[in-house]
Length: 326
Image 1 (cartoon, rainbow, N blue to C red):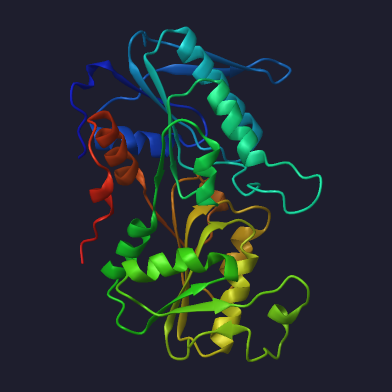
Image 2: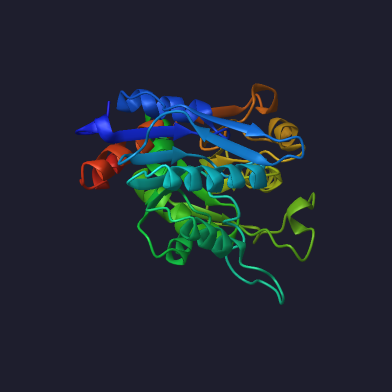
């Protein structure tokens, strides 16, 4: 259990996006969740009431900006405003999933950079610190002029595979070229496993062709257990297609590992129908039971977040949170 020193002036609040994770974080810290009420007017306007004093307190607000994204973002902004007006000393936002992070640059003309807009809104709301997990693009940290603690879920995922006792026949796979850096870090954590890349291109149908071309998988995957690593599983089609190709190129088994599981549309069925053995994810986004694929394995980032919150409060380094138990 993580412990906050002199915690009598610390308050933890959970909004509506991921209360189960917030309850786990509170249990890890040995603290209760403070009481607030989030209600809606008939026209959909959000109203927040804080049901206890926060005057002079260090406050942590736990809210993932996941579906419904806009409603959860507004809940968070309104909650922060309420805390400021209630004279909280510090307002720290714990955002396990940073919504809009995929819109981090202008890929085409006349596009917004919405990840920066969200950063601007949070800073205009006068938060003191952001704690988040696995941003889609690490450079989003640079959109803020306040401290940002960017936590990594990779050690949590790696520990799961180490505990399963996979041997030396592992290969860590990027589902596209953009994910190579993330896959390289994962491979180093898991003991220096080799990496491979699925060469999926958007300009043709090569990835779904029944006769795969020899350059569609870069690296040796034959007779190996492949782990396809990504930060987000949204529709599920990219990891499903990767699994199909890897099997065609001789992989014994294929697993998927991702931090955030969005599961839009038919994603649960896509994953269950795929050639993936298991889909290993974390609980940064709360998925109702009827939306969870049978192949889903969910690990909790509550120990990671609770450890980070305790160390931030105690003015300690968070580096030792990433030690593996090999």
